[in-house]
Image (cartoon, rainbow, N blue to C red):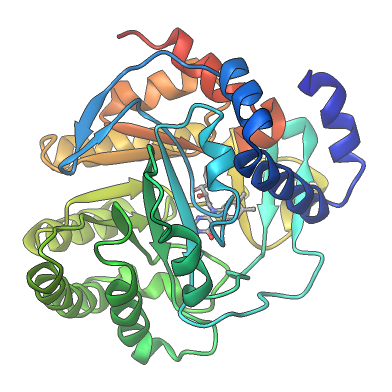
Length: 340
Ligand SMILES: Cc1cc2nc3c(=O)[nH]c(=O)nc-3n(C[C@H](O)[C@H](O)[C@H](O)COP(=O)(O)O)c2cc1C
């Protein structure tokens, strides 16, 4: 079916196609008759597992960036995902970078995006996920700073967001690895990371007491870190008792692509990212001796890619670009072929 839908979507500007898709998913998610049809069509086998103190019904999740404002997660959940990561959410609404800012590299099954966290802000997202209905799916919220917040005040944005979403989201992600917000990735450097985590851990401890509930915190890192930078970061992450890591975000490297877009700035995702991110997972798992749960993401276009990341040491995996190129049946096809 996606064979026929894809050319239609690809005839649109990538951001327009995305916006159409997420709105269709939003409608599907709240229309009872449609919900049932989609749910039956994309029914997936149960492959439950535990990570960061949470129970996931299967290891395949939706990566951050797809449902930035939490408008389509009810529809997305029907596609079989075991978890959905909403965001990146910033404290205040913001429009992001100038358009066009998303490009398809069709032959390479990749995307380049320069979005810069456009979104309706944290208050809007809070409303979207705080309904009293049972969710039946694990919802993570990925947090980022506003572009207008100077880097030396970034901690305040993250503190604010933790206070807003602690206890509401099932897990929270500190995103310090997107390449499209100026300076953000500097927060991954030893000194900055230690300072940031020190204050965030404090806020989390207060929140845990206040809300009488523990919300696991994960850090999402960049695949562009050198081995030493990554190891330094891991030492600090473990020292501060962070519950898990997401490896990894998009890359600014263009080494593995040969298309006309090799000079285009922004974050590259999709197939060309698969190998690098899998190796990063392996390095993290070896260095931490498997003690830090890993969500593996980057270039998963099918079951073999997901399996490679799980075998390298990931507990869970996420997809984004694969969904654009392979369609909504991707989750089901991955899960059907994964061993129990
Ligand atoms: C258009 C687009 C927007 C994204 N936005 C975000 C974001 O807001 N926050 C984030 O942490 N990652 C974001 N990502 C990165 C994805 O979550 C993921 O880490 C990356 O794309 C690699 O996975 P993939 O190859 O399966 O797409 C975005 C990716 C794409 C393609």
